[in-house]
Structure formats: C-alpha cells, structure tokens
Length: 359
Image (cartoon, rainbow, N blue to C red; front, side, top):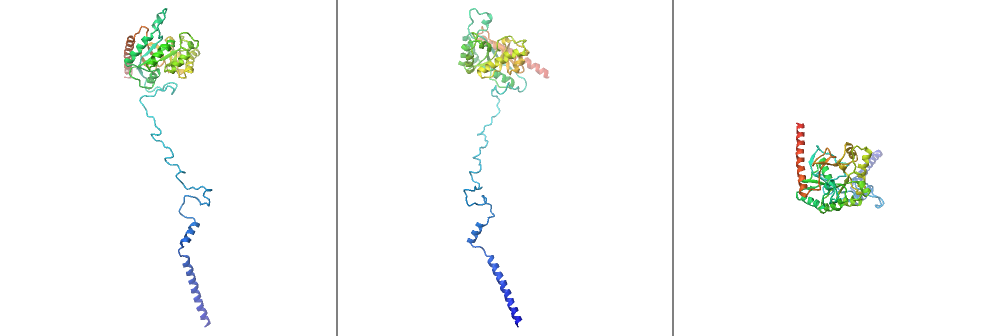
C-alpha cells in the first residue's frame, strides 16, 4: 500500500517537472516588447553596414568616415580636358614663321627651286661731284627709290624677307604672289637717312648687310650702332657683311671665324635678334667660306651672281638683281621681268634634265 503511494507521488512529480520546463520554454520564445527591442538594437551591432566605424561618444574628437559631398572629388570640382578649355592646335598649310625654332630650318621633302628676285642696292643718295663710274653706278637717288617702291607695289609685288624665302625653299612655306626681297649692301649712312624712312612709310622692310668693323671704328658715311638699333626696332632686318669687307678667299679657318662669326655675334649683341644671313664682300667666296658659314649656323648667303633662280640645296649661293644707278622705276621693272623670264627658262631646262634623268 505504501509503495503504491510513492509511485503515485513520483508520477505527479515528473508531470510537474515537465510542465515547469514547458512553461519556461514558452516564456523564452515570446517576442520582445518594443522597449526591449530598442534596447537590444542599441546594445548589439547591426548587420546592416553603416558609413561610420564604431560610434564614439564624442563626434568631434573622432573623425567620421561617412562620405559627404565636400569630402570627395566631383566632376565639377576637378577640371577636365575639353576642347574649349584646352584648345589643340591643328596642322596648317601655312607654317608659322619662327626662325628661333632651331639653328636652321629642317629640309622637308625633295629639293626645291623657286623664282624669287632679290634686289641689290648700295648707296641711296646722289653721288658727289667727283664720284667715279663705280660710285655713280651704285647710287640710286632717294626720289627714284620711292618711285621704284611705288611701281613694285602697283604691279602686285609683295616684299618678303630672307627668312620667308629660306622657309619656302627648305620647308615648303607658302609665299604670296610675286614675292620679292630688298637688300642693301655695306651699311652706308644713307640707309638710315633715306631707305629706312621710305620703307617704314609704306609698311615695307628690307635686309641691310652691315660691316661691323666700320661701325666699331666710326667710319664716316657709315651707320652707327644707335642707328642700327633704331632700324632693327623699326622692323628692318640687320644681317652680316663680314667684319672688315675684305676678300675672304684663300683664308684660314681662324681668320674666317673672326670675320663671319665675330660680325654675327656683334650684331646679335646690339639687336638681340639672330643673324641668319651673310653677304659676301664684293661677291667673293670659296668652299672654305661656305663651310665656316654653315658651322657658324648661318642659314643662307647672297651673292652678286645675276639671276632670280634660288635653290634649296645651295642656300649659300642665292642670286640677286643689281639695281644700277641709271635705273628708273620702269627700267627696274623691266630688268626684273627679263630676269624672271630667264629664270623661268632656266628652271624649265633643269626640270627637263631631271625628267630625262629619271626616265
């Protein structure tokens, strides 16, 4: 009887234990209240990534990594390369005349031959009463010179520089119609008194070949360095005619360097412009002179050879047309036209010879 009571108590005790366990489980699985959920989310890190690292109690002492508009570069803040902001130069058929790009123009393409007259003046004044035949022949009166300029312009000639001609020969630079070059030899004082004003008045320019030693010594009848500087500042082209105007043939290299490079540096020191061209004194030169000219970085040289046919492969032998003292404006125009006709025939013969050779 007693054993049955104990079994009865054991069964109920086990039932109560199971009931208690079920009650505990049911209480633990109930959803949290809104207050408990807020506390739990605040205490535990969220699985959703946030822009900041572990939050700090002091926002000012710990920099936040949260990106903002001002902390990151934008397209408007960073300049970009556009056609309007950075213009890109396009190739042109007419190259810019920039003689300081290199020591001499780079030859481009096949050798070129052009028909361009280069006029050769000397004195621009009335010869003195006791002048000899040479002085008279070299002297053009200022009035006639003005008439010659007017007629050349009326006939459509365009005055260019020796730089323009060299670039046309070497690089294919496009010249204007009927180009012509004006040059003055020796650097006489009347170049400043008459030629410079007449040219400036008409918006024209010319090349003046000066003898630097004559200026250094203050020779009467020749330019001064102050006049040279003024003419250079006024748009005239000042180039070298050697240092002492002597025959340069059969000279050693040291002497030629003194004559050619010395005069070049003397002019450049006074004008701050490069000297690229040379005029042979009395038209006399040899191969040694040409070699020194090339080594001294001269681009070309003018001769006294009559003609108007200029070749890119012999730049140190440019042909010229002598302006005689007896020439009126009409005489000069006729001489130019005759020379150009001869140059055209000569050029045609050269081209024909080349075509036969190629054939």
